[in-house]
Image (cartoon, rainbow over all chains, first blue to last red; front, side, top):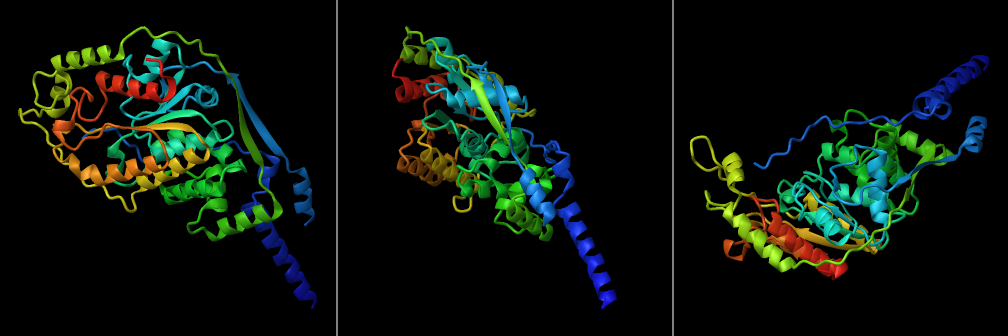
Length: 49
Length: 373
């Protein structure tokens, strides 16, 4: 029982930590990210023909 | 739970006020990569009732007869052009959505090129980046008054073309996770669920506050029909070395091969069903109608002397004109399927308006918006 509770606590913390850090991206609420300037990988050169 | 409550209480909606004087009241912006200055002038143009905003592409030039030069110079009216090659319906829709709070009853004119429909793939990603600026997308994303259908439409475009961008910005990601109807990633789904359930998004809404200029109208003293005829005659004087009624210099540079033969091009039949460009046009027309804009369209022709199979575009052009007529949008349809219907000089080359063509457009715009010429 004691071992079960220990594992439950550890895995709950791991899953919660994963969600906060990688999914919710909790850092972004403390440090506002600047909008990344996205570019197109494909350059379309204007051609009439 | 404690964390969620903490962050929910700390959450605030931030407004990024973009303030500035309206400066450019004529000519055009090729795109919005200049940033704040271009965005302010564009929003001001839409907001300033009585100012006409033109959405066009490669036909835009420096000629004094293009409406964004002609009307400000001749009548003192404000006209701003937006666009260059590849500025198509989807980009125009995004620009208009970004001005959702000020565009009711705005005067706009869209220049439609049949060539956009030929491959049926719609707007390319490079053009999207140039016209769908981060501030515009953020504004659309966070404007509750904009119908979700438009947000879904943008989200699906971003999702479908995600591999062609150098990355996925926070705004792109929010569009995809919150609005895309396409397949989401597992993590994206959890992300959207968490944000929606716990109201976690940081909201930064750009708010444009341009100081508008006031136009001083002048009385027009010229004769447009006389000028148009004169321009047509002058143009025909420049078409001596070819049978296509295109400018000699253009013919030598683009149509004549080194061996002295002439380049020939056969148009491909544009599909109507599943044509992304046509879907974009329908969305644009729907939005224009919802916002009760005073909109007009100009359909640019192909030069039928050069393109000998322009008739294959007839079903598409019929669909387009039917759509515009159903929505009571005045249209100047210059498209022709035969040389006998073509007014020489409308185009200066094979697909771009010449000065005579621009005068016809000026007459059309005047009949819709000014009745002054």
